[in-house]
Length: 277
Image 1: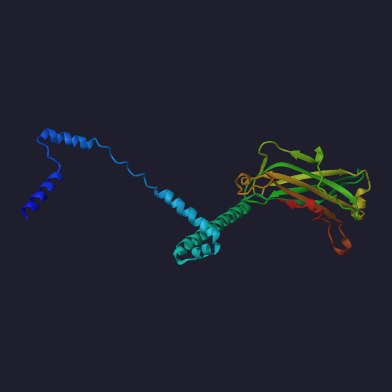
Image 2: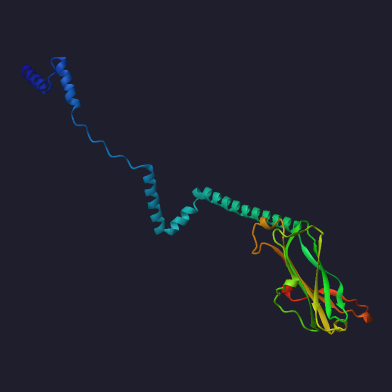
């Protein structure tokens, strides 16, 4: 038994590394260990963004192949908050559109009530010069609005037609004797301001007065006035023309003393002659 114990001790001693005899040997051994090749570090892990992109791509491919599953997932209780946010966004958009529409209506109302309105009215009866074949008339243009109208252009004329005849459907152009244009900002017409305009027609018929009074011929007075106002550059939606225009047309109604009817000018004519913008 003693022999066996001795053999075991010898084997155990042989397996142990010899210890350095001094500090120098111990330092050399430590340096040798540090000079050994270090293991290669593991590769960097995939970033969270890449993982999320990969998951989204897989999710998209799955729902594309299974559209019914996508609908189920969209309607799942877990997505209720998303639907609430979407509904709130739609409601906010509708409310914003309604607010813009209200602001536009209010602005339009302010401009309509505050803008100038040029209207036309005939003054008296036709002026007929016996023996000269001349027929004339005077029109009064009035600014019925609440701000200044800047008149830039106007034209008017008087015509005598046979009974039953009417003016051409197309609104005419006026010659230089019946037309006037002003440069710059135009002529200011203040609220309730009046602007008279006259016209004369040479018929060549020395008995024109008798023909008109007998109802055989009819007197027409028509024209237009074009003007600007302070609101033209403030419109939310600008119209095609940078000005406003009023067209007017009047027909002389022959008096009939037998029935107590006095002669007067009435608004009448083709649609192109009676307009306002």
